[in-house]
Length: 284
Image (cartoon, rainbow, N blue to C red; front, top):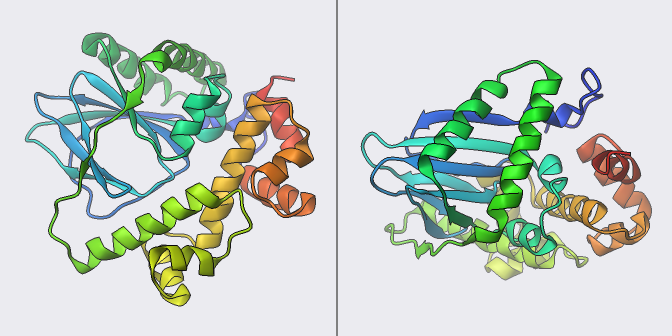
């Protein structure tokens, strides 16, 4: 896991973690996850499909699709010659965009949202951001994020949940394992505010705790406890930016059992204390 470092030339390091690129839509052999808001634009005549939380979610040409990429996902299907434009915005920067609390909560809860866009205009924007994302100049990076922020503000009212289809891929050992992991992820997302344990997560998926821990780590790449912490820290980041709640209250509302645990987990993951994070996100 990469944590925030000191500012580079006065610019927070997260600005240097924005990524934007164009690629052929090759299917991915296994699910992956990362702590960004992922934005995808399809160039082609047919839809591609993401496998995300047990659904096949269409990536439709002429629409931009976005989701929080901490949930396991992979490109499951493609069409010949299809191209994807992909934009990755670190979660901390996304949370500083001052979008509606409802929209942010939808994304953090695992919803995949999309909106119709002017394809030619979006191709131009993505092309410029792709150039900017390769720049080592902090001011260029900051200007790029300001443009992305404004674009998200304008796009937000049009974002709506996708109509993902139920997976119809014939079950295999891997598919069954992924379904179990998906069940565990859903349980964690719905209950991370509570004092839950591995046994609770395993029980929700109908498996033994030891098997649950092994399967979860082999599929996602980190433990159930680590995933639970990611969800709690993400919620704390949202509350620190979107509300004026006392920092200690934010910790308890996010599911941490004590103030010391909250500070320890948050600082370990974000590279700064909750209070420092709030001040930086508010530009103080």
